[in-house]
Image (cartoon, rainbow, N blue to C red):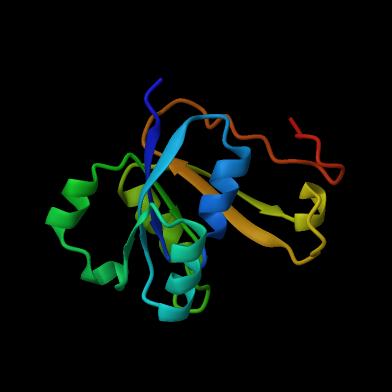
Length: 142
C-alpha cells in the first residue's frame, strides 16, 4: 500500500504529525507543514527536521505549491477564534464531503488533560467513515 501523502496545515509544533506517527494504522508521510508562527516553526523543525516547512499563512500558498506537494490527505489544527463550526460544515457539504464529528477527552486516550477537544474527519468517497470514537476507558465505541 502506498503511504498517504499528508499536508499539515496550522502545524504548530507538530502535535498532529506526532499523533499520526504514533497511532496511524495506515502508512503516511507528511509532505509539508504550514504555519506562520516563527516560534512554533522552530520547535517543529527540531521535532521533524526532514519535513518541508512553509513559514506562511495558508492563504499564502499558491495553487502551484499545492499541486507540487501532491497530497491526498490534510491534517490541521486551526486556532478556534476565526472559525465557526457552521461555516466549516457548510463548506464541507458544498464541496461534496461526508464527515463525522466527535468530542474526545484526552483522558480517554491516556493523556492527563481533561479538556474536551473537537475533532472532525471528512472525505469525498461515499463509503462510510470507518473511524470509531474511544469510550471513556479508551476502548472504541460502536
